[in-house]
Length: 221
Ligand code: DC
Image (tube, rainbow, N blue to C red; front, top):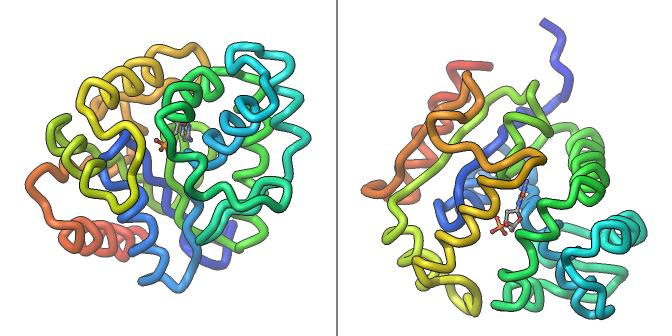
């Protein structure tokens, strides 16, 4: 079979605080590729809307804003050249981002950019909520990563410099909004892409999750 991308493409989905970013970074390092945090893209749009006094629920204006922003996603997150790596992790952005992520105009723009990112990088590890189901249905491996709410809140609280939604009720509110929206809602573990590897990492160490995913990827390549 001809491969669509020279490097493996891994899609990682799941609720907030499940360990997706940690897994994505470790996996990308193992594979000699790069990781894309698509949540950071939605956060960058939410932050920019708040900065400009645009209501996060204003579909048209936030949609236009999303198309106009230049984003650079790597170890740091740059929006129109400004480093917003910490600014996109505040409680204000946590609150606004679910509204922004429910906006179909924003999703269209960002999904396109995510696909371009994979093409430009010749593959990579992409994490979010709709990666295996919508953005990259042809991924070599799809992972649905979850963990108990209490454990997810504990992990968020432990993240260095996390000023965001470490409390269980805040995480739960955001998951509910992400799961209830009309456009590309966050699937539950049971609704994950049919061919996804579902991992409940509540009792797993980060390295064990990476090993399980590397093994599954080897089996599929
Ligand atoms: O992963 P995160 O917590 O940084 O995501 C921020 C928000 O963006 C969250 O409300 C879910 C949403 N999101 C999304 O709808 N689709 C994605 N592919 C990634 C994130």
